[in-house]
Amino acid sequence: MSNAVNRFLGGSPLGVLIRLLLISLLVGVVLSALGLTPLGVVDFIVDFIQRIWNLGFDALGQFGDWIVLGATLVIPVWLVMRILDRGRG
Image (cartoon, rainbow, N blue to C red; front, side, top):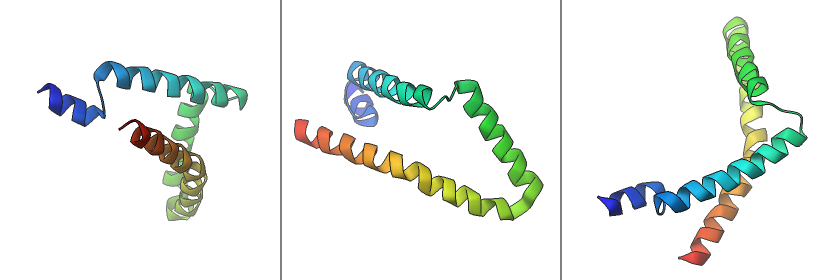
């Protein structure tokens, strides 16, 4: 059972928790420096969903742009995390 949990989480639960806390801290610092707040992000998501509903499929083009914009940050972070993980294993 423990092996399955470790495999699912990508490591020991405590190690994963510590990594997630550190990553959350770093992302939180960056988002805070950009002036974002948790409530602001939630409001943004709700507004976005309402705009898609109101505008129809024209908003999907903007959705794609946002995916690409987010991927410019997420993909390199993911790649670095995979590289660092491979170095340990």
